[in-house]
Length: 315
Image 1 (spheres, one colour):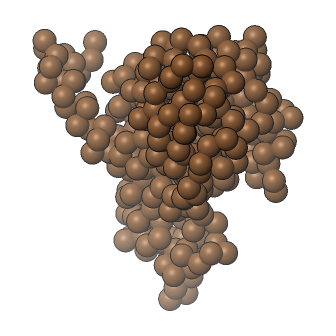
Image 2 (cartoon, rainbow, N blue to C red):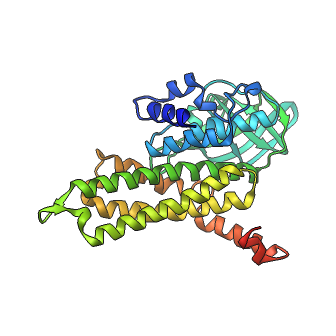
Image 3 (tube, rainbow, N blue to C red):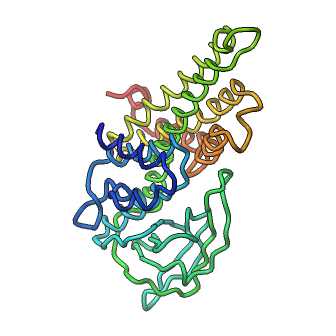
Protein backbone atom coordinates (compact mmCIF):
# COMPACT_ATOMS: atom_id res chain seq x y z
CA UNK A 1 0.00 0.00 0.00
CA UNK A 2 2.89 2.34 0.67
CA UNK A 3 4.16 2.17 -2.91
CA UNK A 4 0.65 2.60 -4.31
CA UNK A 5 0.01 5.70 -2.20
CA UNK A 6 3.41 7.11 -3.11
CA UNK A 7 2.75 6.61 -6.82
CA UNK A 8 -0.75 8.07 -6.61
CA UNK A 9 0.46 11.14 -4.74
CA UNK A 10 3.33 11.67 -7.15
CA UNK A 11 1.01 11.54 -10.17
CA UNK A 12 -1.79 13.59 -8.67
CA UNK A 13 0.52 16.34 -7.45
CA UNK A 14 1.73 16.97 -11.00
CA UNK A 15 0.22 18.78 -13.96
CA UNK A 16 -2.32 17.02 -16.19
CA UNK A 17 -2.41 13.79 -14.15
CA UNK A 18 -5.17 11.95 -16.01
CA UNK A 19 -2.95 10.52 -18.77
CA UNK A 20 -0.49 9.23 -16.17
CA UNK A 21 -3.33 7.70 -14.12
CA UNK A 22 -4.55 5.81 -17.18
CA UNK A 23 -1.06 4.70 -18.22
CA UNK A 24 -0.25 3.45 -14.72
CA UNK A 25 -3.56 1.61 -14.41
CA UNK A 26 -4.62 3.63 -11.37
CA UNK A 27 -7.67 5.01 -13.18
CA UNK A 28 -9.17 1.52 -12.97
CA UNK A 29 -7.79 0.44 -9.59
CA UNK A 30 -10.17 -1.99 -7.94
CA UNK A 31 -11.75 -3.15 -11.22
CA UNK A 32 -11.23 -6.82 -12.07
CA UNK A 33 -8.37 -7.50 -14.47
CA UNK A 34 -10.46 -9.92 -16.55
CA UNK A 35 -12.91 -7.08 -17.24
CA UNK A 36 -10.15 -4.75 -18.40
CA UNK A 37 -9.25 -3.14 -15.08
CA UNK A 38 -5.98 -3.16 -13.18
CA UNK A 39 -7.19 -5.30 -10.27
CA UNK A 40 -6.52 -4.58 -6.63
CA UNK A 41 -8.79 -4.29 -3.61
CA UNK A 42 -11.26 -1.67 -2.46
CA UNK A 43 -8.50 -0.38 -0.19
CA UNK A 44 -6.24 0.13 -3.22
CA UNK A 45 -8.93 2.09 -5.03
CA UNK A 46 -9.56 4.14 -1.88
CA UNK A 47 -5.90 5.05 -1.58
CA UNK A 48 -5.97 6.59 -5.06
CA UNK A 49 -9.26 8.39 -4.39
CA UNK A 50 -7.93 9.75 -1.10
CA UNK A 51 -4.89 11.14 -2.91
CA UNK A 52 -7.11 12.85 -5.49
CA UNK A 53 -8.98 14.56 -2.66
CA UNK A 54 -5.77 15.56 -0.91
CA UNK A 55 -4.43 17.26 -4.02
CA UNK A 56 -7.84 18.74 -4.95
CA UNK A 57 -7.55 17.44 -8.50
CA UNK A 58 -10.45 17.50 -10.97
CA UNK A 59 -10.19 14.03 -12.50
CA UNK A 60 -12.97 11.47 -13.13
CA UNK A 61 -11.39 8.79 -10.93
CA UNK A 62 -14.45 7.78 -8.92
CA UNK A 63 -16.61 7.77 -12.04
CA UNK A 64 -14.28 5.81 -14.33
CA UNK A 65 -13.19 3.05 -11.99
CA UNK A 66 -15.32 3.01 -8.87
CA UNK A 67 -18.68 3.54 -10.57
CA UNK A 68 -18.76 2.79 -14.31
CA UNK A 69 -15.85 0.34 -14.34
CA UNK A 70 -17.19 -1.75 -11.47
CA UNK A 71 -20.73 -1.60 -12.83
CA UNK A 72 -19.71 -2.96 -16.22
CA UNK A 73 -17.53 -5.63 -14.64
CA UNK A 74 -20.45 -6.70 -12.41
CA UNK A 75 -22.58 -7.14 -15.53
CA UNK A 76 -19.88 -9.16 -17.30
CA UNK A 77 -19.25 -6.44 -19.87
CA UNK A 78 -15.78 -5.29 -20.95
CA UNK A 79 -14.59 -1.97 -19.57
CA UNK A 80 -13.81 0.46 -22.42
CA UNK A 81 -10.78 2.69 -22.37
CA UNK A 82 -11.06 6.40 -21.73
CA UNK A 83 -13.13 8.48 -19.34
CA UNK A 84 -16.22 6.63 -18.09
CA UNK A 85 -19.16 7.67 -15.97
CA UNK A 86 -22.30 6.02 -14.64
CA UNK A 87 -25.81 7.10 -13.73
CA UNK A 88 -29.30 5.90 -12.89
CA UNK A 89 -32.47 7.88 -13.41
CA UNK A 90 -35.80 7.99 -15.19
CA UNK A 91 -34.68 5.89 -18.17
CA UNK A 92 -36.40 3.01 -19.93
CA UNK A 93 -35.03 0.43 -22.36
CA UNK A 94 -37.25 -0.18 -25.37
CA UNK A 95 -37.13 -2.54 -28.33
CA UNK A 96 -33.88 -2.71 -30.21
CA UNK A 97 -31.92 -1.72 -27.09
CA UNK A 98 -33.00 1.91 -27.32
CA UNK A 99 -32.89 4.12 -24.24
CA UNK A 100 -35.28 6.96 -23.52
CA UNK A 101 -35.25 9.24 -20.50
CA UNK A 102 -33.30 11.81 -18.53
CA UNK A 103 -30.31 11.60 -16.23
CA UNK A 104 -29.64 14.53 -13.91
CA UNK A 105 -26.26 15.97 -12.92
CA UNK A 106 -24.16 13.16 -14.34
CA UNK A 107 -20.50 13.66 -13.38
CA UNK A 108 -18.20 14.25 -16.35
CA UNK A 109 -20.85 13.34 -18.95
CA UNK A 110 -19.55 15.85 -21.51
CA UNK A 111 -16.03 14.39 -21.25
CA UNK A 112 -16.96 10.70 -21.09
CA UNK A 113 -16.01 8.22 -23.77
CA UNK A 114 -18.84 5.96 -22.64
CA UNK A 115 -21.74 6.20 -20.17
CA UNK A 116 -22.99 3.22 -18.16
CA UNK A 117 -26.74 3.57 -17.53
CA UNK A 118 -28.74 1.53 -15.03
CA UNK A 119 -32.30 0.95 -16.23
CA UNK A 120 -34.94 -1.76 -15.78
CA UNK A 121 -32.53 -4.17 -14.09
CA UNK A 122 -29.96 -3.84 -16.88
CA UNK A 123 -26.81 -1.85 -17.46
CA UNK A 124 -26.48 -0.27 -20.89
CA UNK A 125 -23.37 1.19 -22.51
CA UNK A 126 -24.08 4.45 -24.34
CA UNK A 127 -21.99 6.86 -26.38
CA UNK A 128 -22.69 10.29 -24.78
CA UNK A 129 -22.09 11.95 -28.15
CA UNK A 130 -25.47 10.54 -29.24
CA UNK A 131 -27.30 12.15 -26.32
CA UNK A 132 -28.39 15.69 -25.64
CA UNK A 133 -26.18 17.13 -22.91
CA UNK A 134 -26.89 20.30 -20.97
CA UNK A 135 -23.70 21.31 -19.23
CA UNK A 136 -23.67 22.08 -15.53
CA UNK A 137 -21.14 22.13 -12.70
CA UNK A 138 -20.80 21.76 -8.96
CA UNK A 139 -19.41 24.50 -6.72
CA UNK A 140 -15.87 23.34 -7.50
CA UNK A 141 -16.47 23.74 -11.23
CA UNK A 142 -16.44 19.99 -11.96
CA UNK A 143 -18.83 18.86 -14.74
CA UNK A 144 -22.28 17.79 -13.55
CA UNK A 145 -24.38 17.52 -16.71
CA UNK A 146 -27.99 16.67 -17.54
CA UNK A 147 -28.25 13.95 -20.19
CA UNK A 148 -31.36 13.41 -22.32
CA UNK A 149 -31.62 10.09 -24.17
CA UNK A 150 -34.18 10.17 -27.00
CA UNK A 151 -34.27 6.68 -28.46
CA UNK A 152 -30.49 6.30 -28.24
CA UNK A 153 -29.35 2.79 -29.13
CA UNK A 154 -27.09 1.17 -26.56
CA UNK A 155 -23.86 -0.44 -27.72
CA UNK A 156 -24.28 -3.25 -25.18
CA UNK A 157 -26.90 -4.29 -22.65
CA UNK A 158 -26.61 -6.90 -19.90
CA UNK A 159 -28.55 -7.88 -16.78
CA UNK A 160 -27.10 -6.39 -13.64
CA UNK A 161 -27.63 -7.20 -9.99
CA UNK A 162 -26.77 -3.63 -8.98
CA UNK A 163 -29.70 -1.25 -8.51
CA UNK A 164 -29.88 2.53 -8.26
CA UNK A 165 -29.62 2.43 -4.46
CA UNK A 166 -26.42 0.40 -4.60
CA UNK A 167 -24.93 2.72 -7.23
CA UNK A 168 -25.72 5.65 -4.93
CA UNK A 169 -23.99 3.88 -2.04
CA UNK A 170 -20.91 3.29 -4.15
CA UNK A 171 -20.87 6.93 -5.17
CA UNK A 172 -21.33 8.01 -1.55
CA UNK A 173 -18.40 5.91 -0.37
CA UNK A 174 -16.18 7.23 -3.16
CA UNK A 175 -17.03 10.83 -2.26
CA UNK A 176 -16.52 10.10 1.45
CA UNK A 177 -13.01 8.83 0.72
CA UNK A 178 -12.24 11.90 -1.36
CA UNK A 179 -13.58 14.11 1.43
CA UNK A 180 -11.17 12.57 3.94
CA UNK A 181 -8.28 13.29 1.59
CA UNK A 182 -9.37 16.91 1.22
CA UNK A 183 -9.82 17.27 4.99
CA UNK A 184 -6.31 15.93 5.57
CA UNK A 185 -4.97 18.58 3.19
CA UNK A 186 -6.97 21.33 4.90
CA UNK A 187 -5.46 20.26 8.23
CA UNK A 188 -1.90 20.19 6.86
CA UNK A 189 -2.31 23.62 5.27
CA UNK A 190 -3.80 25.10 8.44
CA UNK A 191 -1.09 23.75 10.73
CA UNK A 192 1.63 25.02 8.41
CA UNK A 193 0.03 28.44 8.05
CA UNK A 194 -0.44 28.77 11.80
CA UNK A 195 3.24 28.01 12.29
CA UNK A 196 4.43 30.48 9.66
CA UNK A 197 2.05 33.42 10.05
CA UNK A 198 3.09 35.86 12.78
CA UNK A 199 1.02 38.34 14.77
CA UNK A 200 2.32 40.46 17.67
CA UNK A 201 5.77 38.99 17.21
CA UNK A 202 4.94 35.29 17.40
CA UNK A 203 3.32 32.59 15.21
CA UNK A 204 -0.47 32.60 15.40
CA UNK A 205 -0.31 28.88 16.15
CA UNK A 206 0.97 29.75 19.64
CA UNK A 207 -2.28 31.52 20.51
CA UNK A 208 -4.62 29.32 22.54
CA UNK A 209 -7.69 30.16 20.45
CA UNK A 210 -5.93 29.07 17.26
CA UNK A 211 -4.66 25.90 18.94
CA UNK A 212 -8.21 25.05 19.97
CA UNK A 213 -9.44 25.56 16.41
CA UNK A 214 -6.70 23.33 15.02
CA UNK A 215 -7.48 20.65 17.60
CA UNK A 216 -11.15 20.71 16.63
CA UNK A 217 -10.26 20.52 12.93
CA UNK A 218 -7.97 17.56 13.55
CA UNK A 219 -10.62 15.81 15.62
CA UNK A 220 -13.30 16.21 12.96
CA UNK A 221 -10.97 14.91 10.25
CA UNK A 222 -9.92 11.94 12.41
CA UNK A 223 -13.48 10.86 13.27
CA UNK A 224 -14.50 11.01 9.61
CA UNK A 225 -11.40 9.09 8.54
CA UNK A 226 -12.06 6.28 11.02
CA UNK A 227 -15.65 5.88 9.78
CA UNK A 228 -14.63 5.96 6.13
CA UNK A 229 -11.78 3.46 6.53
CA UNK A 230 -14.20 1.10 8.27
CA UNK A 231 -16.59 1.37 5.32
CA UNK A 232 -13.76 0.75 2.84
CA UNK A 233 -13.09 -2.53 4.65
CA UNK A 234 -16.80 -3.42 4.33
CA UNK A 235 -17.95 -1.66 1.13
CA UNK A 236 -21.03 -3.89 0.77
CA UNK A 237 -22.35 -3.01 4.24
CA UNK A 238 -25.06 -0.34 3.78
CA UNK A 239 -24.84 0.73 7.43
CA UNK A 240 -21.06 1.24 7.28
CA UNK A 241 -21.34 3.27 4.07
CA UNK A 242 -24.18 5.38 5.44
CA UNK A 243 -22.22 6.13 8.62
CA UNK A 244 -19.12 6.97 6.57
CA UNK A 245 -20.85 9.46 4.30
CA UNK A 246 -22.85 11.01 7.14
CA UNK A 247 -19.67 11.55 9.17
CA UNK A 248 -17.56 12.77 6.26
CA UNK A 249 -20.19 15.19 4.96
CA UNK A 250 -20.86 16.61 8.42
CA UNK A 251 -17.17 17.04 9.20
CA UNK A 252 -16.45 18.64 5.83
CA UNK A 253 -18.41 21.78 6.67
CA UNK A 254 -16.69 22.24 10.01
CA UNK A 255 -13.24 21.55 8.59
CA UNK A 256 -13.72 24.06 5.77
CA UNK A 257 -14.98 26.75 8.15
CA UNK A 258 -12.10 26.34 10.61
CA UNK A 259 -9.47 26.18 7.88
CA UNK A 260 -10.66 29.51 6.51
CA UNK A 261 -10.74 31.02 10.00
CA UNK A 262 -7.11 30.05 10.49
CA UNK A 263 -6.03 31.35 7.07
CA UNK A 264 -8.08 34.54 7.11
CA UNK A 265 -8.57 36.34 3.79
CA UNK A 266 -5.59 34.53 2.24
CA UNK A 267 -7.48 31.24 2.05
CA UNK A 268 -10.26 32.54 -0.18
CA UNK A 269 -7.98 33.79 -2.96
CA UNK A 270 -8.05 31.80 -6.17
CA UNK A 271 -4.27 31.38 -6.08
CA UNK A 272 -4.22 29.60 -2.71
CA UNK A 273 -4.62 25.82 -2.71
CA UNK A 274 -7.03 25.98 0.26
CA UNK A 275 -9.53 27.63 -2.07
CA UNK A 276 -9.52 24.53 -4.31
CA UNK A 277 -9.66 22.16 -1.36
CA UNK A 278 -12.64 23.74 0.37
CA UNK A 279 -14.60 24.14 -2.85
CA UNK A 280 -14.43 20.38 -3.14
CA UNK A 281 -15.36 19.87 0.49
CA UNK A 282 -18.49 21.96 -0.06
CA UNK A 283 -19.32 20.17 -3.33
CA UNK A 284 -18.61 16.56 -2.43
CA UNK A 285 -20.39 16.73 0.94
CA UNK A 286 -23.73 17.02 -0.90
CA UNK A 287 -23.13 14.57 -3.76
CA UNK A 288 -24.74 11.12 -3.49
CA UNK A 289 -26.55 12.32 -0.38
CA UNK A 290 -25.55 14.82 2.30
CA UNK A 291 -25.18 14.18 6.02
CA UNK A 292 -28.89 14.67 6.68
CA UNK A 293 -29.97 12.18 4.01
CA UNK A 294 -27.63 9.48 5.27
CA UNK A 295 -28.42 10.17 8.92
CA UNK A 296 -32.10 9.74 8.07
CA UNK A 297 -31.31 6.35 6.49
CA UNK A 298 -29.35 5.28 9.54
CA UNK A 299 -32.17 6.35 11.82
CA UNK A 300 -34.76 4.50 9.76
CA UNK A 301 -32.63 1.35 9.78
CA UNK A 302 -32.14 1.54 13.54
CA UNK A 303 -35.86 2.09 14.13
CA UNK A 304 -36.73 -0.92 11.96
CA UNK A 305 -34.20 -3.23 13.62
CA UNK A 306 -35.52 -5.91 16.03
CA UNK A 307 -33.09 -4.57 18.64
CA UNK A 308 -32.26 -0.89 17.92
CA UNK A 309 -29.64 -0.73 20.68
CA UNK A 310 -27.77 -3.73 19.32
CA UNK A 311 -27.99 -2.16 15.86
CA UNK A 312 -26.40 1.07 17.12
CA UNK A 313 -23.68 -0.46 19.29
CA UNK A 314 -22.81 -3.32 16.95
CA UNK A 315 -21.60 -6.82 17.86
